[in-house]
Length: 112
Image 1 (tube, rainbow, N blue to C red):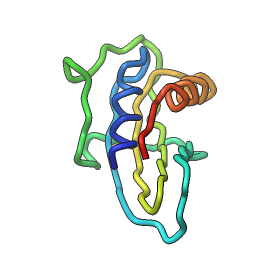
Image 2: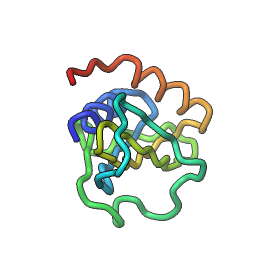
Image 3: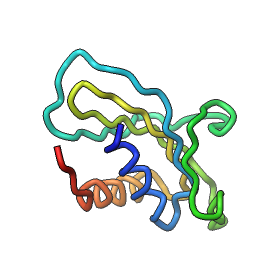
């Protein structure tokens, strides 16, 4: 899904985002005419890198850590009938991540 890849690339440019994994992809039954990005209520537990293939890395692989605890957030991107899950590893808190996620989505341009 091109839009999910664009979002992953946009997120990797942000300070505090350490990695993005393109995870499960499926086709929904309901049509989503506009891009929708959802942040799951619960964070991902466990080793994300070992669980999922299709890793999107930054320029030099892993970005350096900022010294605080890392969290992995589950995003769901929908457009048309396509649904794509993204797992984002970040040292940002949940509220800070929500803010930068909104900015990243708003800054993207789509040609549908």
